[in-house]
Length: 625
Image (cartoon, rainbow, N blue to C red):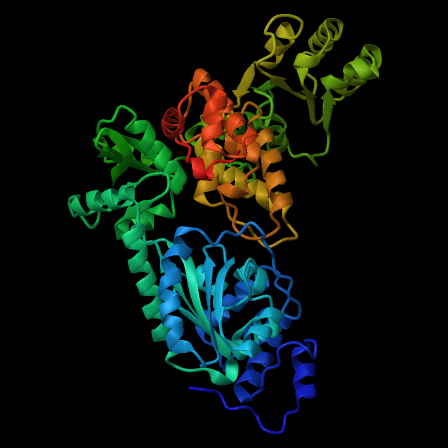
């Protein structure tokens, strides 16, 4: 049902209200729109929506998200992605459906928009020249992004945030330039996993709003999903069949998944919020590596232990996925169960991580923090030794002084040791000597003498040691003096379950002035396959590179640097296989992706090339050459 325009309000007055250029889209104002404008002004000024405002709850919630994301209601700068492809499965399924449906919409002044799961417009169908010009004016056209953190409340981005059909009419849009439109969007879900793959939206002028838009677009979306099911891969259908054949126990979470698809019952999908999809698949892949069913314990981020039973799902001799049944661990001894179900609270909340290895480190740090014993914090380069020391004693603590042994050669042994001796003579506070492995022999002996002279009457002494260096002289005796209490930090490869926590923490650190960005399971899964010789510092550098290249929107595997994707195959490769993979990727890059020419360069047949790439778990058409 349409909203009648308010008579007597001139175009120039409306332009003053919405503050858009005269050549841009102009909406007619009515009492409802005027009330919505007042409600949004109140939200911007006070952070709350006034009582009695004609604002539906889902729109109010979206406005608050838009405000928290830093969306400017008076300005709109959409992201443009020239790499958006219209050749994917979603477009292939939608194109014939929309082509047929558009015949019914001819002359109705409507537009159909198809967007992907990141809010990027893939295709647009519109036969009204005037409406097309209006949409072009607000960049509602292919390859532009209308995700909610970028464009505020709208019929594409808000659907992706809520996962439900959404109607946004006129002044309900958060950004003013969209007020002339009514948009009705519905999610398009994967026919197997039921995850949202994109959005189908129908848009018209605000004065042409019609109550039949929602049922029409819902019918079209269901037709697209049905067509997508017919196009689904054999692997996806086999996973669905295996899931449907599993015993039905509603209270027991059951997943059927591989690295691209996940299917679960309601109990499983509720659990998924507590465990990352990528890590769940990596867990299953390790358990079924021998292609046999197996049981083991899976630890959730909150410390709860779950007993998992993993069974391989096969297609002939090939393993294509896993069926996972999950149940809480039941202890035989009741007295022991509380400690197993929930670990001690994390004493250093600023340090990201929840794995057993990392919690053990934090428990040791908590125990040693108030002790007077000398402390040695050791670990590979980049594991976070300095961050742990700062968390234990506070970088701003009065009387905390740090001496970097790596600077000793530049400052001179004499001045450096004298400064340390003078500080150790002061019994207050904490003295931290970083990188004791960098000390020259003469300096290491001098530091030992300084510590021996101070005895137990000096300040609290802490040292950091980078392991992996030589364990012989000169710093061996010095390390022994600090190692009365010792904390060994695990390398990142031994605490991969902390990756989601770490990337989230690092993202917050380096994007404080931008809308929050989420790391999708595919990106986390790709990162989990790296060897991480540089540990957390290497991860920090990768996060900064990704954030620099992607200013808004969710971060997927395709947003990772090319060298990272190349070094992260779908399964862990042996050293020989890695060399072989590098040779294949180099040949493909040299030939611009031509498989026949690459096979000729490598002196192997094309069928052998395909077989090797499949064995490495790399899809040729999606490989980052």
